[in-house]
Length: 90
Image (tube, rainbow, N blue to C red; front, top):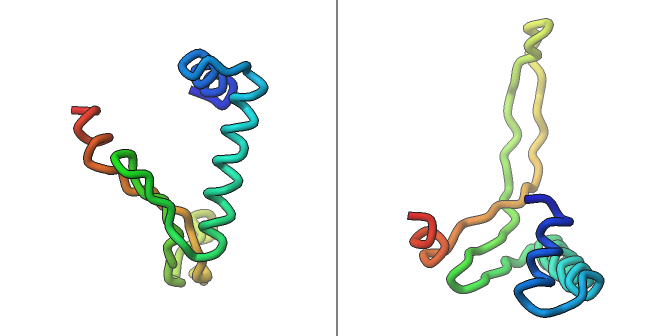
């Protein structure tokens, strides 16, 4: 499902117009992004938790040349599904 299909699904299920559904989805994404940038987690009970995790720096290998390279430490987004979401997929 891509963003347009998600907007359409939200609009149908919530009886909103597509433009209202897209605005709501964009607001959700912006809010989650801003919260993660502040180092906080976003927990949606039953659905899951979005959080920012620190990934340590490490040594990698360039597959083309075989040369060792240094991969710097970074912060990556992560999602941990909640119990209700896991149960729904069983």
